[in-house]
Length: 267
Image (cartoon, rainbow, N blue to C red; front, side, top):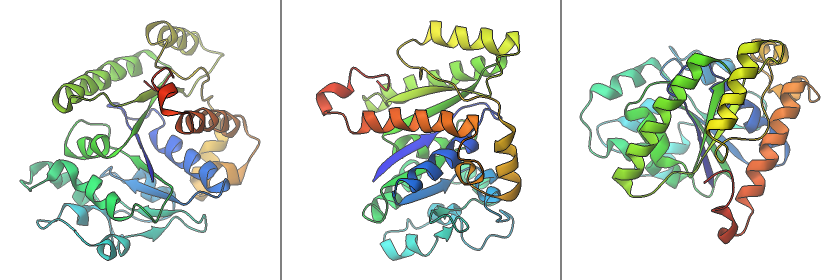
C-alpha cells in the first residue's frame, strides 16, 4: 500500500478536492483505494453523502482507549464512498476530542490501523484538519508522501510557511525528512494576486513545487454538490486534466528506481 497524506495548516486551499480527485483517477486505473478522513468537520465524509454527526462508524474508533489490533476490527469501520469502488474511513465531530485525551500510542494510531489493511488496498489517501495536533501528526507519521495544496494567494503562502516549519520539527524528532510536494491550487490567471503568488511559490521553492497548477474550476463545485468524483462528472474539465497531470508525476516518482528518487521534486 502507498500512503499519501494531503495537509496544510490553512483551510480552504483544496485539500479535500485534491484527495477526492486523485482517488478517483487512481480508481480509474484499477487501483484499490482507501480514503481516510481525519478532519472533525468531515468534509470528505460529507462529500459522499454521509452525515459526520450520525455516521455509524468513524476514524474516532481508532482512538479508543485500547488500540485496535485486529484486521477485522478495522475492516468493520469501512464504508463505501458511494458507487465509486472506493472504500472510506469516515470522520465524526468526536475526533475533535482526541487532542484532549491521553492515550498510549496516540501519534501512531493511523499507522497501526493502515498496517492491518496493508494487503487490502493499493493506495490510502488521508485528508487532514488544517491545524497542527494529534490528528495531523498521525497523518504525517503514517504517510510516505505528503501533498501540500497551496491556494495561489498571499495568506495561503503564510500557511505554507507554518506547514514547512512543522515538517522541519518532525524531521528533527524522527531524524528523517518526509518527502513532500507543493501543489498550487485555485489558480486564476485573470487576477494579479494569483499570478504573483504562483511566481513567488516557484521562486521560493523551485525544487519542492509541482510544475503545473490546479485552476479554479466550477466543475469541482458541481461534482461536490452531487457527490460525484470530479473525473466521473466531467473527465475533460480543466481541473480534472490538471489533476491527471499531477497524478502522472506522482506515479512516475513512485515507480522510479530508488537511486533516482532522491533527485526528484518530491525530496
